[in-house]
Amino acid sequence: METKDTVRALLDRLPDDCTIEDVLYHLYVLQEVEQGRADVAGGRTVPHAQVADELRRKWSSAPPSNLGGACSPSAQGRPYLHCSGLSSECEPPSRTGDRTSGQLDDV
Image (cartoon, rainbow, N blue to C red; front, side, top):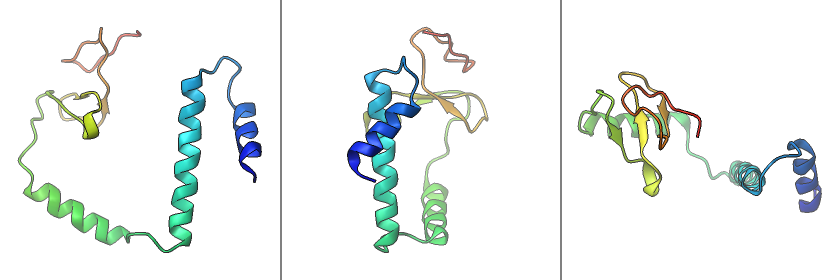
């Protein structure tokens, strides 16, 4: 599919009240998926077992994390993520949210 056709199809799928940020985000996702497919087609992949082994080695040597609900910086200078208690799910903090309970207010 040509690039313009892809963009038109994307715009047709998005709601009428979408923002430029919405469009850019979805274009980014489409681009990343296309790049991933090209990597697979080109043999530029890493076997699942190798990734699992590398992560296991990385996390087994990492210092213990604070599971008490502390905030920790995420990768590449993105906003802090809030991990509540023993939950494995992290949420971005809200400026008006309760950072200790993980509950976020609508902003």
